Every structure is written in C-alpha cells, then in structure tokens.
Length: 72
Image (cartoon, rainbow, N blue to C red; front, side):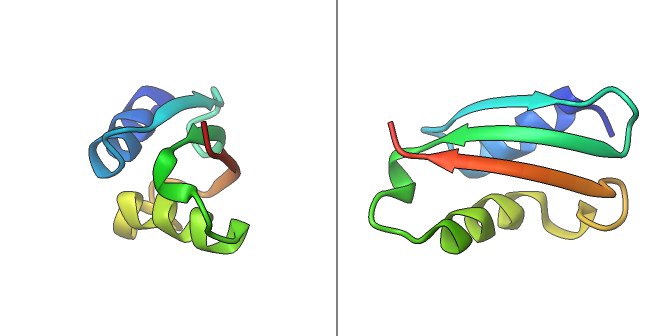
C-alpha cells in the first residue's frame, strides 16, 4: 500500500476532503484530512469516518495510520 493509494481511498470515500498522506515504509502512515463532513463531530467520530473509507485494509495492508482531522 502506498501513500498515494491511501489518499485516493480516503478521497473516494470523502469526496470533498483535502487529503495529505505521508509515510514511505509501506506500513506506517500519517494523514491529514480536512472535510466539511467533520463539522460538529467529535474527533473520534471524524477518525471513524476516515477509517470507514479504508475498510478492511486497516490492520492488513495498512499497519498504522496516524490521523489529523479538521474542518475547513
């Protein structure tokens, strides 16, 4: 899994989002996701929205993903 693939998956699930993913070892990544869909949601709910875009790839192809989420 590459950072570009992760960004594309998040973008597909949250089409309005601005997504930046870092990480070059193929397992550990950092993502910053900015989306209007996060408005009024607690951080854990925001993270769940992002994790939902990745489905079963979390814990398999993606070992670890550190998230920073915010609204525009």
